[in-house]
Image 1: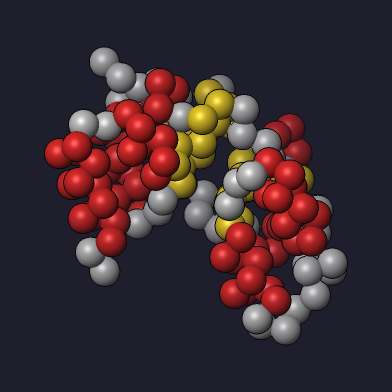
Image 2 (image 1 turned 60 degrees about the vertical axis):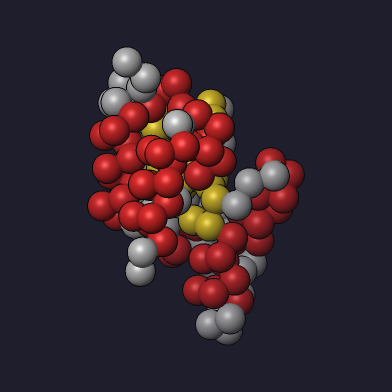
Length: 137
């Protein structure tokens, strides 16, 4: 049985909830990612922010990314347990219409599942079904 842990990209780095969005953008550039999990105390997941969130919900809205925190934009407290099945992870992504899914083990983030991870791991028919479900809107 393939699990979320088998699919995920391990070692997801959190941005602390109190950090500013300009720092989040720097981290995304350094890590080569388009999304970061937002973590509060004890590395507990509070949500996720994307590069698009920073542009649309901060910069385009006239807010200052050097004063707006990750917590201000953290959305989508949706995650999957590391031992969940691939089907459970896909169902959660489809249900919430999300393209990135944090993976938790013992309430701590251990990785992220992205569309690229799915494309590398899923059979074509399963991937096609997922893509149709996510992009149907």
